[in-house]
Length: 240
Image (cartoon, one colour):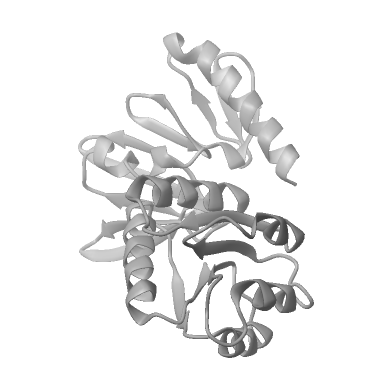
């Protein structure tokens, strides 16, 4: 995820950058973060390579945030635009450039956390990954590549796209901590988690995955599993 922070005050840029990096790290999300002290240098960089998310201060020397946003929208209609400001007086102008949110200074941790969740919900694949140790080496597995994982004999067997199986030793609870924060993943029982992106059917007792594996669901979770799968399919259809 490419992130731009545009603010003419270095201290403000660093404060926001630190908080964003902390929140994204907790969620296992890669970030490529760049800081800019004015709108002109930001626009030059954005023309070279687009940013996923832009945090743009409204009150800056030179071109202000609104003017910079208007220029950005001439060649980039997709970037998620968040104004950082001490006031929401420019709400109408923000609407005109399709601003996603106003982040009012001073920043509060809860608001940034909620904003990150909203950003991630709008990006189909935001670069999330899980870091596991396999045969003594750290391996980063993108969430999208995980089909399902199962825990037995003190080991977790991670089945990924391409028919690969990776084995790591850790508790199931620790392994699923970051996965639980992503709506793609569903725990079918105490030791099995699946990626709903790879589920093609739920027959009432088990999920059928796209590579043919059938995963049984704990009896007490059957009703919840059906509803979760329906909600996921609806949400995926709504976003596509």
